Length: 127
Length: 127
DNA sequence: ATATTACTTGGAGTCAACTCAAAGTCAATA
DNA sequence: TATTGACTTTGAGTTGACTCCAAGTAATAT
Image 1 (cartoon, rainbow over the protein chains, first blue to last red):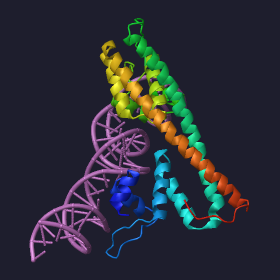
Image 2 (tube, chains in turn yellow, blue, green, red):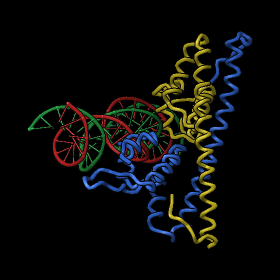
Image 3 (cartoon, each protein chain N blue to C red):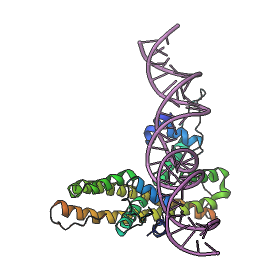
Image 4 (cartoon, rainbow over the protein chains, first blue to last red):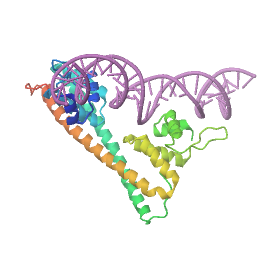
């Protein structure tokens, strides 16, 4: 698979994919004899994994650490597990923050609906 | 309230609060005769509101837009409502992404637990 | 009266995560 | 054979969101 095919498949720009490879966030993709990247399944799985993790806001720093541990082999399984647990906890916290914000937005949207429908004229100009 | 008091109350640095004021993310705080900020309740409520919205990852750009509409008065209530709805939808999407990532992490953590406990020796070195 | 401390400003610097530009290579087509 | 288009690299530039610095002022403590 060429970089542009992978780029379409995962909706990442070729530049981003090359950047991820450069910083060690995904393995170095195999190359054709003329030096062009020819992505194999394993590299694609890494891209998909990284994309999923990044989409939740996980930092590149943490992910490169994970990838690095991975490359060091099975002895680092425990450390990788701890890293993932820590990140999961961060995501849970983030989820709570988002939940709180959504609830607040729901309330404000309700108020705005009443205002817009003219059912509430006593609107205090408050955030 | 001085800036350092507000800073402690909301766990934001004074620099961040000044920055928020400068870019119009919060109203200009009242000043003492010697020019020092003396935050009132309304400004504090804005800070708290902005802090909550920012904690969910909402962009400064969108929030300044909201604040700007707010300043334009009640005619913009409909537009503000739409803006909030759009942001709520974004947060819902983000929440789903995080949820998907957490589930994936849960699975991986389970696998890692088995590996660490020696219950799984057939581990394929896959992301 | 001087020193300390907390504030003020404008502007520069930092960091994460891309994103773009320039110059070059290679395979395929007109 | 020449051009086209997709790839390559290195390195610089951008964006968002702060964060820090230097120089200055004002109120308070010694």
